[in-house]
Each structure stands twice: as structure tokens, then as C-alpha cells.
Length: 383
Image 1 (spheres, rainbow, N blue to C red):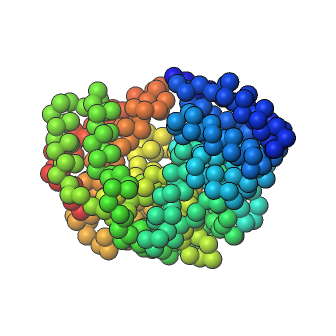
Image 2: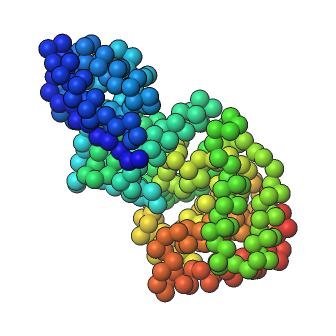
Image 3: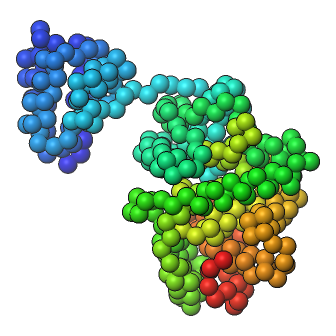
């Protein structure tokens, strides 16, 4: 089948519409996906638009037009062609050379372009669908009452793509933790209170994946590292969890939560799902505890915070979320979170290069040990 690319160039108007119709018809391939490259298209009149309508009818399927200049895109948009064709505007190019890095994660790096603007640059070159999906999810969360930064532009950054946000004088909880250590207790309360706001938002059914189902999928990936008995028990524990439409962010670590005029706001929405709070808490356990178990300098190298803050942050999350200092109660809850977190950590190892080398082998062995120990006492995942 393949893709058939047809280049549109110069001006297409009354004077040459018939010529263009003949040229396009000769290049049309009804068996393939027909795509128009508009990088060199300077102008198109109503006569040219009629040619494209004829071509669309002849092809009998959706036609995509990409790399459209802002001026030509405006013509397509004003005439309603963006509803009939898949029209992709040319992305403006942005350089992040010399820009401050304000966040770095599994999926990309966040740069500050100027005091009012940040851009999240994704690691993978085919990230436009990911960015578009994150924009969609952010809008859904925003209308449900979760303060969320919504990207207003997609840009090209070298060979990668980025999502642009306007965040006036914003800084992350992570930044404040570094610059204002004396505010530790206050920042932890504000941070965890905001996590509860996120968890209070109830999303619409069938629009966002359920975290429970995602984790069941993780089990198939890590199956080679656990026994069949462990696999069956873990799958049973997850399958027993009821449907839950409350929002889960999936990557709520402090670099992804900004303070704008001292009010919290989310900037990372690509991992949102629905489920019970344990699915967000496990991710925080992985960030602040699991990654550092066999790599003591993980927090300083990844988040830029002192490595000895990992345990206080994690304990602060538990105590503030559950409003308890009862060690026995928190220990039971902690074990359930650790079990889910270990599943996810082992999954991350399995699907990345992190599994390689001496450190990777240590992490896999420790994860196997945690699963073996925790399954002796954890009989359900409700918290």
C-alpha cells in the first residue's frame, strides 16, 4: 500500500488550476495513502481548492496535506477545508541552545525559553501524536477542575518536537525544595493537598485508560522475571480492584508540578489514567525510593536534590496523604504501594536499557526479592 507524496508548489489559481488537476490526477494512486506536501505552496485560490475537492472524491478516502505555511493554512481554515482534509500547519522551529533545563524525565526535557515560556521537548522523533494526545488529556482535566497548563503550540526542535506552554514566573516544587529547604513541611503539605485535588477529579468513562488495566499489561512484560505463581497472584490482586474513574496523573514527581504565584499547576499530562490513589503513590515511591536503592546518587543526578531527602519526602507524602503518624498503619499501606511500585519499576527496567549492566542486574534482583517478600503479606491493594 505505502504512501504516495504529491508536491504542491508555487501558486495554484484560476490561471493554472486545470494544469494542476491534470498533474495531480496523473500522480494519484488510489491504492496508497495520498499525501500532499505543501512546503513550497505559496497560495491557493478557490479554483485550486475545487481541484483538491475533485481529487478527494476521486481518491475515495481521506487526504492529508502537511507542512502548510500559516498563510495558506488560514485559507484552508477560513474555507472549511480543515474539516474535509487533514491539514497540518508547518511547525515553527525553536532552538533550546543555552536554555535553562527545568525538568527532565523519561519522556522528555523541559526548557525555559524566556521568563514566560517553557517548552517540553520529547525524546522520540515521532512524538507529535503523543503531544496532541497530551493536549487532549490536559483539556479534559482542566474542565474537571484540575489546574493544568495547556500547550498552545507544537514546535520543531532540531530533529525532535516540543510542546510550548506559557507559565509566567513559574517554578517547580522541586526548585522550591532546593532553594527554600526551611519550607520543607509547608511545601510537602501544599504538594500533597494538590495531589488530593487531582484525585478528586472524576473523568468521563471510556476516554482515558484505567491504571489497573495498564498494570495488568505490565505483568505480561515482566513475566520472565517472576514465577508463574507470583504472576497469577499479582494478576488476581489487580483484577480484584474495582473500576474507578478518578484521575491519576501517573508522574506527579515534584519537577512536574509547578507553582505559579504560589498556586500549584500540572505541566505533565501524557501519563494520566483513572484509578485509585495507590496508582499515583506507587509512581512517587519509584521516583523517591526505588531508583535510589542501588544507585545512591540517583536523586541528585536526576532531580538535583540531596539524596538523603528521598526518605523524608516519601514519609512526608504518606503522612500528609493519610493524615496519620501511626507507624503500623502506614507500614501496611506502604507495603501495598511498594508492591505496585516494584511491578512498575521492573517494567521500566524490562523495556529500557536500564536492565543492562551490573546496576541493572542488581535492580532486577532487588525487585524480585521485594515481590517475593511483599506477596507473603499483601492480600489486597485497597488503601
